[in-house]
Length: 158
Image 1 (cartoon, rainbow, N blue to C red):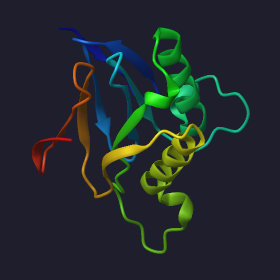
Image 2: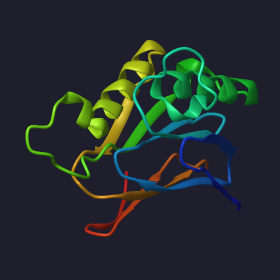
Image 3: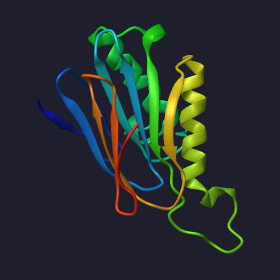
Image 4: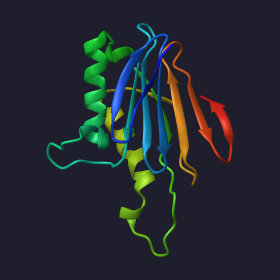
């Protein structure tokens, strides 16, 4: 089994028995998409809600990362009607007195990811989002399980 690392503002796919891992999810969102029949997994490390135009790093933004990740999974043999998603991250790492909506990056990232997934009719099965802690996640192509590691709460599998 190989562990494919996904960097910040990046995405990748893998097939069983491999897994995908990303670290440093604070306000960023880990978007794990899975085709259970083909056992194809995709993971994006989304940093910001929306790109204006065509960004140089499409995996950085929810509105460009999700379509790109889906396209890569379809190229590998996945089918859109079988895809399901799990989410982790989207924390509000810092609080600011009198903060406006622009400072709510974590919650805005989660909202933007859900909006993009809804456009493809991909259901979010479960999520571990919000709070104020960083997360490391590993997504397994064998069964679609997502292991979440935090300093405060240890390990959990969703």
